[in-house]
Length: 364
Ligand code: UFG
Picture 1 (tube, rainbow, N blue to C red):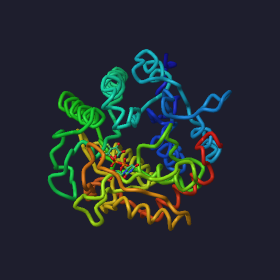
Picture 2 (picture 1 turned 60 degrees about the vertical axis):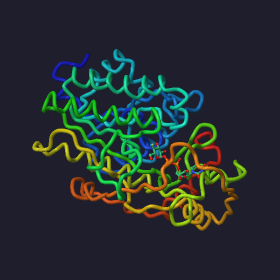
Picture 3 (picture 1 turned 90 degrees about the vertical axis):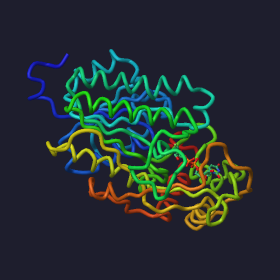
Picture 4 (picture 1 turned 135 degrees about the vertical axis):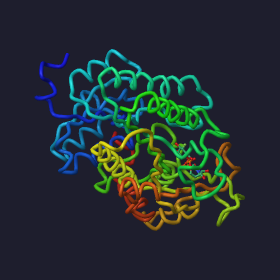
């Protein structure tokens, strides 16, 4: 239970679900690195389904490292967001002002095999979180969404008015779309809700210190960590999925965004909550606005790392679109945010992290 007069004695806090994961941990870092964020305590809940914790440690590796680097404390709870009682206790114990909701399963291919697990974790878990937020009078939310909600692009670049939910290729994508629809309904039901749904394009790279980064379990599904593991010698060669797309060199084009830029987008989003006139549901793309092909990324990575990345072309991967990149104008307008880092920075930082930690956080 909250102590009496809790509001007056407890510092305001930001709850970060999934804060030990890749984008979550970089966002926590970004908040704590900034002196203006000291007004907030950071509370992380994470079930550690995709985050590493060394034996005997209470906190997962990325959070321990962030505490060490910033000298600031992070409240950590090992908890699944479907645990309503557990969440309830956390909301009672802290003066939570807003929530950044990352916690979700995110492997597109796996979601096709395990739709129930994905809908349970991503939709059921999200609804449980929203119930607890409402019960505690917390209505400010930043949601971790994806450009996958747009499905096959009808036009490029993709702006936020592009239809969503059509022809989605996976339960993962549908779970992100359904959650957005749920949040729109919440905002219609009660004007107290303020929701910013950040639609990420392709997050890559690592913190510039090289101390935290992406640490996928098993063989990476995504391009950049796969390339990095080939470069460091953990994997033999990159399989390029499709070389016959109608793109610059036949390979798939994506809008890669540095994870530190993405993290800073969340920090800017939270600032909007200070404006009492800002209300309702807002979807905002976070991308650079520029697309690069698979082969362009490989070439940039080779330049950044000085290593050759062996590759071979293979058939297209089911569900992939030819090209996808953002119109990032709304983020500029609403958040006063724009991506500051380019593809060479993304490759340099991905390589810095990977070469220092060939086995991810196990090497920390
Ligand atoms: N690719 C390869 N070989 C690989 C991995 C990827 O050639 O081993 C290619 C893909 O075919 C695609 C590009 O690299 O052309 C990027 O693929 P990623 O798997 O890195 O990223 P996606 O664009 O497929 O997926 C990302 C996120 C998803 C999100 C989706 C929305 O990982 O969470 O964008 O488009 F749903």
